[in-house]
Image (cartoon, rainbow, N blue to C red; front, side):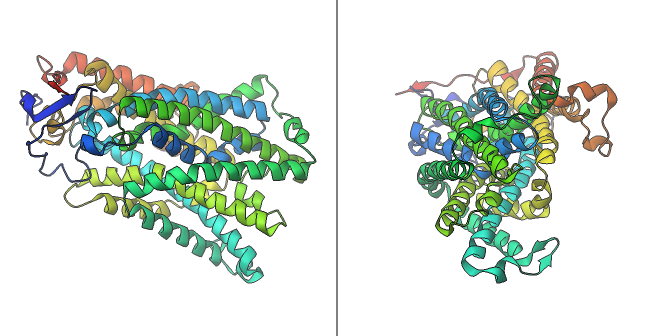
Length: 518
């Protein structure tokens, strides 16, 4: 197949409603073939029902989770005070909201998930590159969150059963009962995802307020232990506001952005169920920066309190909850951790890679099979090693993640907003002979932009995987800005290549608007 773009399909194959949403025209057979299955096809307009509250609740559930807590409290552990930590996290969330809204736009408009959305820029086959990168990142996160949930079960059972559970013999550095708890939580999540997206929506709706109350209870308990709220605010910064702080601030900011960088790509997997653009835009704007900053505020205060009470910051909320002698309080705290972890892990780290793995082989891998693949790989990654060190957790893991996924976000934004002006051809996204086929299913321009952005974003880091952990000296000054460097580089390179080397007439860029109907 040559690198040309055939004429568009007849305009009657898809229709645009008065509110801008697009669907396959009534009476037209849905796309079929090797690149389509029931989970990847556009969601019909009648089933795009999520409201502003649903999206807000989704973000409350995802923001109020143990990983968010440990990210914020981890900043205290490495020397910031509460003001510095909250400032860093609030700014990161305002920044990441922008690509979140930009990439989320295609969801309610076309009803397509991320891997299908990526076909417009990477090619029908080439979309597997960003999909697999994103899926592997999500596998890592799913494993980390599952380990946290397993910890909560381990401590909860230890209080109920006694020393025989807590002091069990060790395997691989942990009690065998901890491994059992990890397995139990793993199975629980797989069982929930098996029931489908509607079950997830209902779960998020009630989990969100439950977790908020649990976090406030933790704050009340720690302030009681510290003798009031004063000591929570009085813990000084070990860095000041000089050079030591700013040296830590930039990698911390990129790490915080990297935490949500997967969701800035994942979000079409959820917005495809949106009732309107207004619902997803308002829901995300209300849900992400406000709740994440509020939750970060709670977590850094509690961690500051733990420093005042125990002499050192306890950044893991499960370990902190285990220090109480109040059995009822402990049980409530650990159940809150379980609900919070379930809420974010299923929504953020299991749904999206399930679509990604399904995209690799649509005829063989369903959404549910993709979820099972994710869950298995999450164990293979050994998440307990990633989670054991807060500094490595924030900078090493999240820096690498943010740098790579920032490159994907830059390409998607450049293609969808700058080149196509938000116009896509739904049927061609599933066709091996359509305008998104490029060369053998791959758009080499997107791959080139991805590689260029990725090398600049992570090449100068101390953990650079390209040179066995050694940095590329010339790129070291960029190491602390991985996400921004990756996004900006890939956006510029992709636009340049598409505008200068696309086939004559740039046929694949001419996604014509379709007629509207009321």
